[in-house]
Image (cartoon, rainbow, N blue to C red; front, side, top):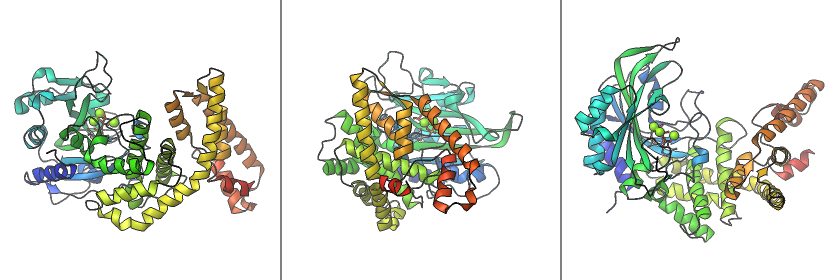
Length: 476
Ligand code: ATP
Ligand code: MG
Ligand code: MG
Ligand code: MG
C-alpha cells in the first residue's frame, strides 16, 4: 500500500529525532519580525537568527515540517500553479538543520538513508546536483552514498548557490532529483538533470552554509558551517505514491473530489478543467492557511497577495461552470483534511468561512462584468485574426472596473493569446502622471477621507481598482 503523506511527515520527523534533532513546530506563514519577507517561504526562516549567531538555542540540530507560501515577493510560484506538476503557492517543507553542528558528510548521509532505506526510493533513478566548484560534495556523494559519477551533475550559481541576503551566510547547494522518465516533462531530446521541466524532479535541496559574504562581496569561511535543507512534502508524497504530479497525491485527492462534486465535472476528462481544479485546490489551501495565520484580503502587502490568490481561484471556478459561491466549501475541506495536523485551521473555523464568503461575494459582480467585456474583446480580436490583447483595453478593465490583470493573463493563457504588457504599463504610467499632476493641484487635506484615500491610492502602484461596480457607482 502506498505511503500516505501524513506517514511520510511522521517518518521524516522520527528519523531526525532519532538522530538527535529537536522537532520544532512549524512557525506562522507571517514571518515574526521580518518585514523584508512577505511570507515564510522555507523551513530555515524561523531559524535565521540562529544561523546568524544572534540567538542561541538549547539544541544544535533541528527538524521541522514548515508551512510555506511562495506567492508574491522573491520566490513567486503563483503563475506556475496548475501548469507544472510540482509547484504550489502553499506547501509543506520538511527540513533538517544543523547550527554549527554536523556538515556535508552527515547531511548527505542522512538524506540518502532516508530516501533509499526508509522511503525505499529506487537508487538508480536518483540523480544528484552539486555546485560547479564543490568538489568536496561531489566526492562525498560517491563515497557516502555510492552515487555513480555520471549521475552527479554540476550546476552554476543560479541553481546551486544559496545566500541569505546580499551579505551574510551563504554557500553551495546540492539537490537530489528523481528521474520520472521521458514520458514526463518537456520531452525534448536535450532534456537533462537541471532542466526546468518536471522530468528530473527536484525533491530535496541541501544548503551547505560555509561562507560569510562581506560588504565588499568577498567570501570568508565560517568557523562553524551549518546545514539547511528542504524537501517538499507534496513532491515526495506523489513520488512515493507512484504519481507524476503532486495534485494526484493523497494531499489533494479530497480537495479535487470536492471540487469535482461541486462542479459536476470529472477530473482527468478535460485538460482545461484539470488545470482549473488544481488551481482551485491549491489556492484554497493557501487561502485557508493564510487566513488562519491572520492575513486578511486587502489592497496592499500580504493581504493583496491573498486577495489575488482568492480571486484567481474564483475565476477558475467559472471555467468549471461554478457560478454560485463555492470557494468556502473547498476551504472547509482543507480544514477537514488538515485540521488535525494544523489546529490553527480549526481555530479559525467560522471566521475563515466568513472571510472567504465575503471576499468571493464582493468580487462576483466585477468578475462577471469584466469577463463579459474580455470575452467580447477576444471575439473581436479573433474576427480580425489578431492574437494580442491591447494594453489600453487591459488598462481600462483594470482602472475602470477593478478587473485584475492576473485574470486577464490566465484567460489569455487558456485562449492561446498574448497580453500587450508594455502598452498596459504605458497606460498605467500615464495614469499615474495624470493623478500626480491632479493631486498637486488640489489641497488634499480638505477633502473628505474617502476621496483623499482615492487620490493617494491612484498615486500608488498597487491600486487594484474599485471593489465592486456598486461601490464604483456610489463614488461617481
Ligand atoms: P524548483 O526548482 O522545482 O522550483 P526550488 O529550487 O525553487 O524548486 P527550493 O527553494 O530549493 O526549491 O526549496 C526546497 C524544496 O522545496 C524543493 O526541493 C522542493 O521539494 C520544494 N518546493 C520548492 N518550491 C515549491 C513549490 N512552489 N511548491 C511545492 N514544493 C516546492
Ligand atoms: Mg523554484
Ligand atoms: Mg531548483
Ligand atoms: Mg532548490
